[in-house]
Image (tube, rainbow over all chains, first blue to last red; front, side, top):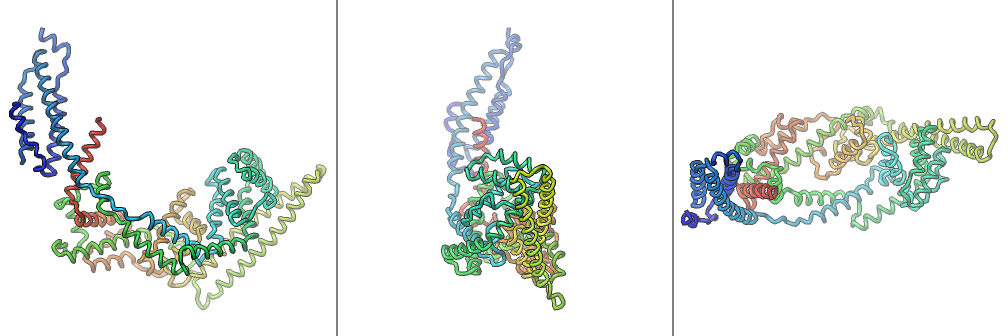
Length: 50
Length: 546
């Protein structure tokens, strides 16, 4: 995975203006998704484990 | 699609699949899940920072520098020339040039303002007298015994250069219950003083006229008008919206830049509704001509819009004065008015001398500490003086009306144009405001002033074209004249588009096409502006979050 990420081509200059905006918005949306996805641990979850 | 876009889209999908399959049943699962979320978040925050940095840099590179157009200098020149025009205006007198008509309008509408405003108006009157070198003291306020008492207290505060008029306010309130017409009497007293020092005011204006003509290198009123027009045209060109302004409007959401893209329906429809034969972009000569005509149309529609706005005022004037248009049978109108003016002048003079005598008697009686049986006589004299003042107040109003009528008759004829009528009202602020109040049924002073200012802007515009050829007393379909002219230039105007209620829509459409032309002529593109707008939105959200 690490190897793969290191290969990411960051040459943004090849992107059109609308692609640039799209890519930024996709990243933003994904970050929002990640934030929502994160699980806040509650007591009842812990109890299940026991 | 470039590598980076491809990578991001695929990676996001892969990560989403991964998260949907990761177990989250146990505490340990959740811990692992959250750790993975954190590491991916960290990575994507990095991507975000890098992309944002790039967006910012690219957006900045598209910025267009604001061109310093020296507008300030031109405006200053315009203001100076407008002042020269105002002072040289051959239609009105020292009375209007010095601003007495404006102050008299304000004081006559006292029910619209408070005590502080009244004091400001009185101070403005006194300032004018002082400017001319006339020192007014309490003895000059002798119209009625009450005025003398009030103005003595007022001048005491003014001479001390104090702002504390609380004692004056108490005196005002006490007098008001005995003499509710006190403000009208203050007005009368100022009118009497203006009349007394008339020559000094005339000389002052005449000296000022000579000075400003030398200062501005102007030999005549006509030359001033010519120079004014030149500066006005220059300012119009320089002040025209440029691509920098358009970018600013887009960034601030005043305009929707999406509508400016070539394939946008709004844009396509704007072109098709405003052109008779579709515009061939390849034919630069025709395209340039089209935009040039569109620019002229914009000015014409703005002028027509103003014409429509003040049409009720023009119609009111027409109804009022049409019957007075000089003809062979009615040549005596002017003579009638001048003789009526002389009669009123002599009536005013007689009544004012009577009033002066009564006031002197009241003053003597009060200072002699007469016994109570004489009190009734003094009381009666006070009533008489107030009654006389009331008669004088109406006489002065009548006198003003006759004076205006005389001015109207001096310009009234069958071919009087809207432009000439605008200049007439512009020259007589008092009567312009009276007419505005009557015609537009506006009740507050602020509303009247707003209308009046908008009227003046219209009247003062030397680049008006249509109204110069429209005669007030002749029925003319102005909309049709505009329509026919521009249809010849391939601009599709119809009676519907020139409907008074839809003129702003038409102006917006014209402005829209002119903006497209401005963008196309410039070094930028609609797409670049769209991009700058998007980057600004991103930054606004970023600022709100951080």
